[in-house]
Length: 570
Image (cartoon, rainbow, N blue to C red; front, top):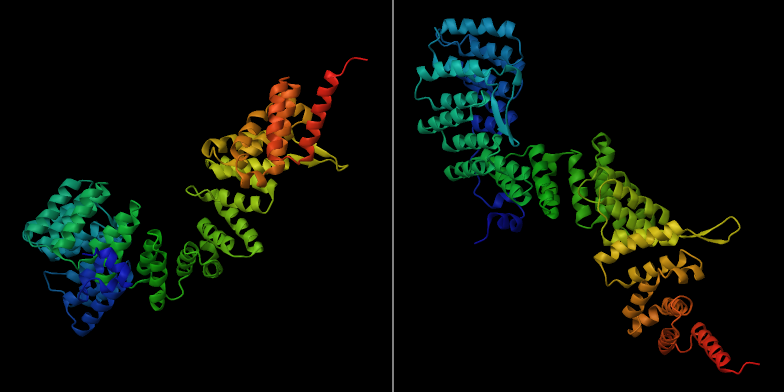
């Protein structure tokens, strides 16, 4: 049986995986954060069915949407319809002052509605208590009051407790009382109130989600997940639980799960807000499902409009999909439309895209962008990519400088970085003075040998590393000094042992092998004074390269020396 995520990926559209849920009611829309839809629904109902309750509900929709002034307009319309002992819309109007931190107006108005209701109406007490919670709102991985300045946990608990005493079986009051205790930093009592709401018949998914939110804020993520899943088990179309699971898995970098749950959230919630659709595409990008991210954007272009972020997500995705031209087009479009939102990763993906094209000039431009992004990236060593370009372009000064920057920023060089650092320094070891005379830079050769020695530890069988360790030790000095100090000897010997017996390699490295044989022959002559070893190495060299003029010249010299040693003294 296919998992849900497999079905999603095969279907291409999250909506085909689950049965469509019914259109959400106003309370669900508010809980989903879809305030524009909730306001439309509630205001239309108030206009078509004017009453104390419908006017209050319309104002409440605007209040929860963060628009207290607009909310007050609806409350004021409803005040004339309030019952004598139930000043509901008058309470709503008072709340609009509280959430704007205008206690000078709010407090006397609260006193007035309490007086009119004789402090006995549970709904009035509940509405005031709820306002003092600031309307705790879960979403995007947090549970925070929409109006932080209105929060007064003690007053909230007081009013809500009085409301609960008046209406002991009201599950909604118990739920919000849990919110008040949470704000009072009493998570245990909060959960108890939520459980009471459940016992009193509150919609189970909403309660489980609330409990999950509490556990999340306490960083008990396993219990948070457990409760969100309970919410879904109770009602497979309860959208907020899917949303919270998506955000929770995003938080812990489990992007496949996050993309799975946000797909399900969009499916059951019908939430087509730009922010939601872009976040859905973002999660799929992070899950490395780059084509899915692109498809989501393309299939929702009407809803997404011209939001610049969609070009960023598409550009990054195309860069990862190795479609550089499309990546360059989209990222540049994003940077043109929203230059103030540019971030280092934009230049990282743009730089990589330019380097994927076939143009040498694009490679250079790619290096510029990667260099711009490199200091800010703590997870990927972009300096390595730039150094690779400079090395291949034979810009060795830049390659060395880039790898030095990499080290300064705390990146550990890998084998390839070390090899390039060594080879660039080796190349720079050959300098010319103003007269054009060759000058050896001993420091460069020493840096080359040190880097190549570290590279050799990581890749001991890579022939060029061994060879250029030998050559760095050799060319750092005059030929005679190099032979006398013997630093190159073990490396030349190892190099010969690695390639001399392999015909293809021997042909490839002929000049270097001849140099190696000449060095070892000279070392046994001038330093070791081992005539037998000297002859042995010469014979070995000639066995591979019998016609090499330099080795033949050494052989002739040896023969002359031997003949002179045997001839009688005059």
